[in-house]
Length: 165
Image 1 (cartoon, rainbow, N blue to C red):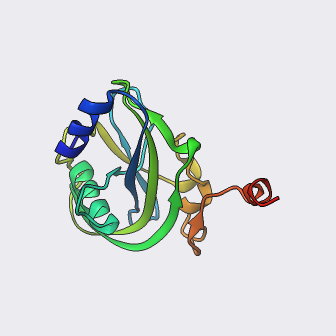
Image 2: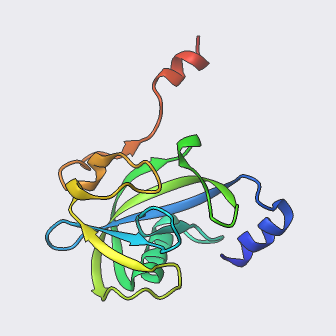
């Protein structure tokens, strides 16, 4: 946890906070998606994490993927933007967050699967059709190479009728 979030948590405790974040879809040559298991009972996840102060989302995804996987990637495309109550999460320590996530399609430039930080217990590639349930409810079609042609905006179109009646 960065110094910024440590100081914030000192003030708000476990209360729900917004957390601008990134997630990276990293594929091997076969098109399988790299997932992370933290080994603490949480579900599998994409390499992901918080955007730090002074950091652009694309920079954050490069840093997070590096820290959690040992791979140097380049973000090639913004795949989706996510948030709201479906992207709330409670960590095992009780900290509650509501993520606002920028999801990037990333290309491996170099490196080997060898996490730099202590947040990763296991890294494994999964076929998009055989992925385990993830900690966050990303749309499944974004994991296939064919399913991510357009930028995905997560929203409820019925929201318009509720707000603008």
